Length: 323
Image 1 (cartoon, rainbow, N blue to C red):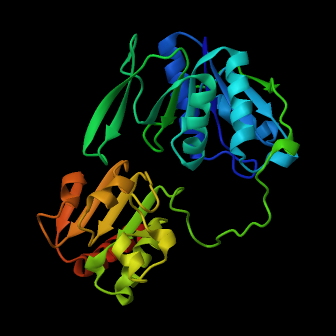
Image 2 (tube, rainbow, N blue to C red):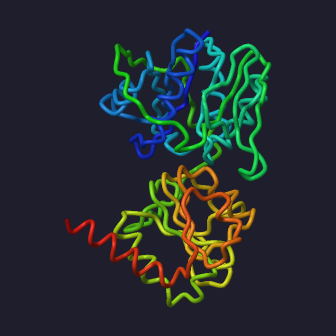
Image 3 (cartoon, rainbow, N blue to C red):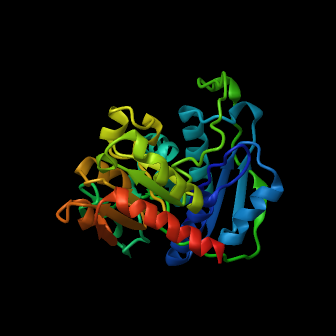
């Protein structure tokens, strides 16, 4: 019995998300009085793999293959499932991002395992095995019981604090061999966005809605984002009107994000929008309507015109950074 965590890499490098997953897995392993093993797929240098060992795992399994640097659901599912079985893992942990959402259902079928998707806390109990997750677009929570022999958990990004717990860790070649010939997904071309923080990676996100009134008023919002090192986002009506790119649209039909800080300027907080941002650690809402639904989800709020508040916030940040 052990815990296995799949750690996704980006061009051979791990991000904060990977370390959060490993920290979570190590804590689950301690609860179960067992060990945690990290699995990496793709060509990752040992020096990078060693970073995972700082967060509590006992072993790191690496499956390298030049032909599988791009996610192929079928091949990756087979590799993770075989590793789960060969290591005797009873808990499998993945991220609740696009990759995890693609792999978890396939793994559930292959391993005959129940899934706790979108979990944001450690298990509430072990017998029965109960996990906590948000429900109804973040307006409620659920206690989900998983009673299968193998249990799959997908962890919400930024929901668990990273804590270093260095110890003795071994790096080994994975117990299975991937065959790139079987991969049906082929990468033809890569176009990387430069000079802009990806919303899914951003620790801080500054977002605007219809309350910004026109695309010409976006300057102070972009300036605030640059000062804070933040990503920029918008509500669906804004992207539909063509004020901002659809790539910035957050919500149920756009990007689902979980930054440490989400600042919403002139966004009323429709259910569909909150579904995409409710996992943020802190939400700050600025809206002229004191009854706007966004205030119910926000930890901090300002009732006021976003166009008047924004310039003052920009000046305040500039003063702080100048000290």
